[in-house]
Image (spheres, one colour):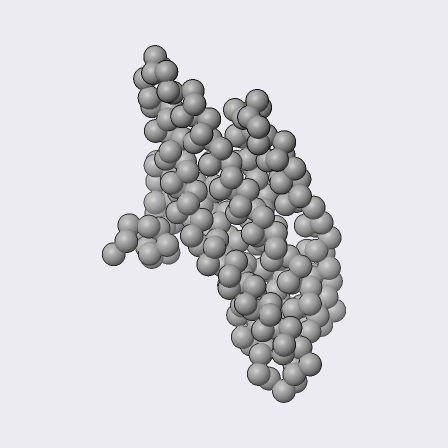
Length: 206
């Protein structure tokens, strides 16, 4: 069996998370949280698709499902991706301080360790716009799960981006610094609005 955490049991993941090892950490948990949000969206779609009562929403539900599943797959990959990025940074810092390649190695690894949580945040953010139509038109008995998905997606974005904030000072002179800041800002745009809309739509049908 692969040693990737995605292939471990929930208990094994939680035990390793609670251990003294630095990985998995917040980035992997953010990716998992986003994947859980996507899974809930897929579940509600599956409880909606093919049911006569929701026939007018069937095509859109199938589209939402496909988007959620693509996002879930990519976020699941990033659970391990964040671990790999952290380990590369740790390895760079372990290089001898008199090693001429050490500063460049640290920066290169930090770039990847910034790109990775940004990708997690960006993917999780794409789930929010899916929640309101699903809460409005999806299976009425499962709208609470849509709300849970929306809140989890928001949490995933914020949990991922704190790692970006931590890494940006190391990259203050890097050519991609402004790109990273712009992406960080964009990933957070309208999160609260999208979440509030989904909650309102779901609550109105409870």
